[in-house]
Length: 256
Length: 216
Ligand SMILES: Nc1ncnc2c1ncn2[C@@H]1O[C@H](COP(=O)(O)OP(=O)(O)OP(=O)(O)O)[C@@H](O)[C@H]1O
Ligand SMILES: [Mg+2]
Image (tube, rainbow over all chains, first blue to last red; front, top):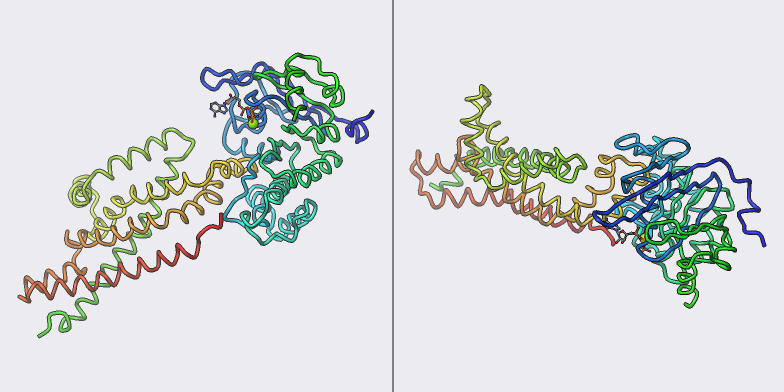
């Protein structure tokens, strides 16, 4: 059996590198000595029990959370500490949140053009043309003039993906992008993500959607208690997990 | 012999003077209050500290004390301006912490997720405040901001009484004291002209509130 990843364009050089990363929230050791390399064009699914540090890991990669030890680098550059440099880094890293987080007072089109106009200094007309292309690609082009609250959850999440893509990021982070959605909307968002993966986008995806992992991921990273416990290709991970923690976890989610 | 109708031109010029104080106070206190609110939510600890100190100290000082600081304190430091400039400045400074706190309640109502999403697409702190957080915060803050601004318009009378001169309050005082009109009708006239400022202001705020309500 081949996973989709193997049929895609060859995996490139290391893009995101976490080297001996530790983080504490007060007494709580949320990330423990994390070492993880994600190569260009690779799709990595992060899976693990609630509270294992998956969101924190994601947020650390675009420095929405600081880390206490170790280094994280993007394309060979360590993450900047503050200010303009940090803003520039974040523009290179797209992020999609569980709760969409669209800007409530802006139209769908404005949500997508804000970054390109303010950060990339694109002309409004250029930004709008590109935004419409992206909205078309995620299937919500006809909603461009509406406000976020007028869209369904699935549509909002697809807009959020378009908003991140508009910045032409080097890597996309997804933190449980479908877990706030009704079942019938999950597929429409996953379809967009699979298409993105097939297009060669580097992606780090926190999700419990095994279908997506099997179809699109090159690798599954299993986290528990702030540690990377196991890493494997999706097929091997789901059918023959090595660690007891992973066996236990899979046993629980497969029962449902 | 009607104290108000006979002196309509005096009342009118007093009204314009008071309106001027109110408008300067409006623009100035909104600008300063917004700046202090931005300080209070900024990632830089010293700015946050300054913002908190500003609000705590000034919000707990009576308006007259702030006025005296400007009128008598600043000249001692060698800063001399007209009473008008001092009066309006004192009004702006006095009102700014109230504007700041009204706005901050609005800022807190904007979901943290939206601010994070703004940072995640590469907006700087100032950009995310200006583009995402404040426009929404202003809308949700209109009712409390309205109360603050109407209170400020009324405080403009205190500033007038304190020596700016030629405003509505001074006109009333002049008519009643120097020209010997009965105080009651004179003050009724003053009140009516004040209502000409505050009632339309309230109506405009209510209209704004309906116009810019955010669909959620
Ligand atoms: N801002 C914070 N302050 C303190 N503790 C936090 C904070 N954010 C997360 N935590 C704690 O850190 C641990 C890891 O949280 P994280 O959100 O990364 O887990 P997760 O794997 O994403 O879980 P879930 O599947 O529930 O989303 C949890 O125990 C959580 O309670
Ligand atoms: Mg999480």
